[in-house]
Amino acid sequence: MTDEQTLRAWWDSLSAEQRARAAVIAARPAPRGMAVDDLSASMIVAGLPTSRPVWTGQPEHLVEMLDEVAAFVARASAG
Image (tube, rainbow, N blue to C red; front, side, top):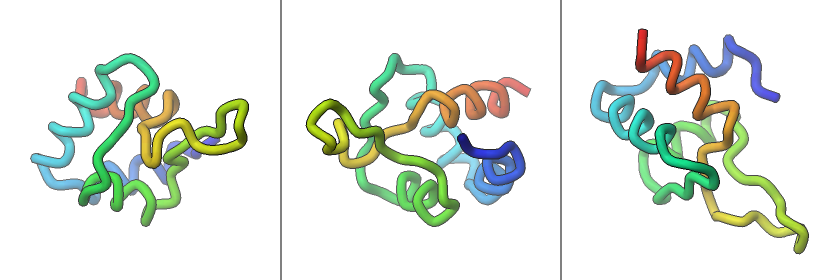
């Protein structure tokens, strides 16, 4: 689980365009697969979780926005 302070620091570092893209991704149903781009790189640099193992033990997607990050983005972009 990612703490609120880490999520807030990541969100504060994003540009307005990155925040808008994050909000669109967060609004999608899981799994929220993401392109390997500046937004996903910012998540990795911030230490946010970006993939979940499935029964094979391998990530379902190379990079995805997990539920806890999506919930934070939804709250942050709404207010």
